[in-house]
Image 1 (tube, rainbow, N blue to C red):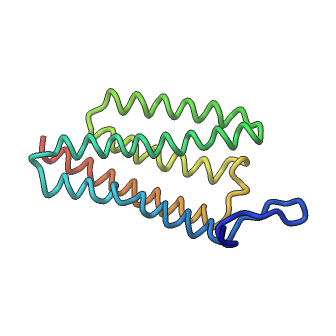
Image 2: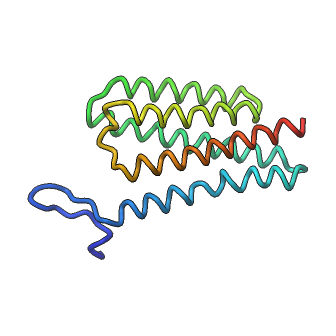
Length: 160
């Protein structure tokens, strides 16, 4: 395996490869494609508005569930019960919104949830060791995803 693509043990400490930030950045930004493409689909193909809305709702739900689920691994390792509980509460609220709300309202709830997750990661001691590049990346990704969801909410309400 190429030396830039793996972690290595140096004096008993696991050292991440320099490619981890680049890979995380690339994957994070690629993950924005559906947040951008699906509202565009809503705009240009109103005949399939329900399809585009359902896909965007499911994608936003999936990404937020992924972020909240990642908290579990960190919280279990570092023994932060409060993060386990908060993760479950946010998930249950998000699931309720996904199932019970119309698409436009869910888009706003999901956009809000992105910032609640981001705010928590910026404020809670558990997340203090986050690398600076990742904190900046999360702000960028959450901002773009939330803006796309807000635009999608407006588009869904315009066609009612």
